Structure formats: C-alpha cells, structure tokens
Image (tube, rainbow, N blue to C red; front, side, top):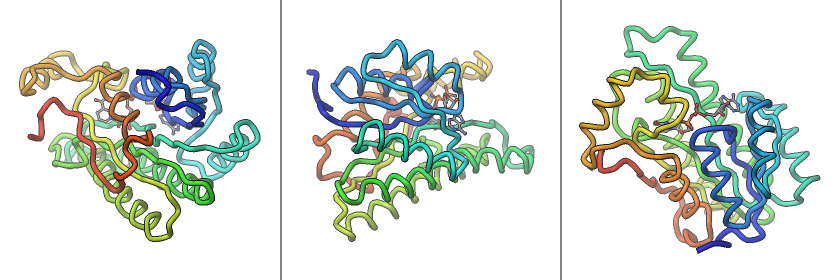
Length: 245
Ligand code: NAI
C-alpha cells in the first residue's frame, strides 16, 4: 500500500540517521513532503538530497530560537505542517552511581526539553488546522533500566508529557492527536556505539531472539501519524519484540 500520507506535510527531528531516517523514507514513500530537522547539517542535507519529497532544515531541539526558526521557514516552504515526529535523542549508558551531572543535563536537554519545545511549537502551529504529533520514547520510558538513569528518566518524562499534551489538545478541540512510540533496542548508529557482546545478550534475551530494524519502528510511526489512527491519542505504542510482555 502506498499514498497513506498523500498531501501531508511532516517534520521529523533527528531524521539524518537511524530511526528518524527510516521514518523520513517511509513517510516520503507514502506521499508526504518531509522536512528532516537535525543538528547534523552535513548528514541531514546529504540524505535529504537522495529522498524525493524530502528537504533539510537545521534544528537544535534544545534551542527555543531554533524551533521558532524551523516553524517560520516550514510555514513559508510548505504552508501547513500536519505531522511532527519528535524523534531526536541521545543516550548515555550509566547507572545512578556513575551518571555525572553533565550527562544528566545533556540527556534531559535533548530528550525531554527538546520534546517539550517540539510539542509546544507543534501545538501552537497545528491548533488552527489539526495534526498529529508522535513522540519517540522507549521501553525505558515504561520500565526502569538500571543502567541508564538519565535516559530512563527522560523517556518516562516523554511518555507523560505526551499524555498531558494529548489531553489538553482534546479538551481544547484542537484536533491534534499526540502519542508516544516505545521501541526496544533497534539497530541504529546509536546502538552501534554499545559493545557487540552487550547487544548480542539483549538480542538473545528478547522473546523474538533479535533486536529491531529501524524500518519496523518507522512502520508503527507511520500508522500512528496517519489518519488510520484517528481515535488514538495519549496512547503508548510499543514495538519491542515482546520484551515488556
Ligand atoms: P541515532 O543516534 O542513530 O540518531 C539520532 C539523531 O538525532 C541523529 O541524527 C542526531 O544528529 C540527532 N540529534 C541529536 N541531538 C540533536 C539535537 N540536539 N537536535 C536535533 N537533532 C539531534 O539514534 P536512533 O537510534 O535513531 O534513535 C532515535 C530515537 O529513538 C531517539 O529518541 C532514541 O532515544 C529513541 N530510541 C532508540 C532506540 C534504539 O535502540 N536505537 C530504542 C528506543 C528508543
């Protein structure tokens, strides 16, 4: 099936690589015009050039000015944004005893403050015409991971921020749906930095015996962002091969 996002305009943060890139490719293949918004300008511009229907805009999700500039330019370029995927994120793997204040602040800034700013400016932009916001959480936003205190806290924050914004938008009759997606471990550049033995152990412990491919997360994001999910808001969409089952 193709054309599921025909005539839709989307922004995907962190779209230069990994899950965000897979989402961008899938959205574009389904007929959407997509803006890849990423702090990595070189890679973002390079990948956008190879995807028909995609363009690049630099964005640092931690900066309010950067979000304002993105939406101002997106409105000029596309007029209306229907879909915002707040996907950009960073990981620092450390338990509570070994998490430095600097790492905590970096993770919270990108994963949680970045998500807050995206939701704020997404709602302000979409409230007159409606839309869908998809926030990338993690299974670490559902159950506590002992080895990533800051990351787990940030992703739990994304989960409940989603529910707050979803309830508010429904109450205001903005016709904006807001949901979170919760992947298990996915084969992306983020995970390439983790020792192979650890990833192999995670895969072996997974009920399906493997980690996910980015396209499997993109498929879920496509559904949640599309009009097919018209009665879902404030919900958690888990894609983890049964890890949290
Ligand atoms: P990745 O590291 O491969 O890609 C992340 C992208 O975000 C990069 O293009 C990077 O330049 C961009 N980014 C980082 N900081 C930014 C900032 N301040 N402003 C704008 N863009 C920024 O990561 P991956 O694996 O594709 O993860 C995407 C999302 O999925 C993240 O939110 C991550 O926490 C989440 N996730 C990933 C899982 C995994 O196993 N890979 C599992 C569960 C959730």
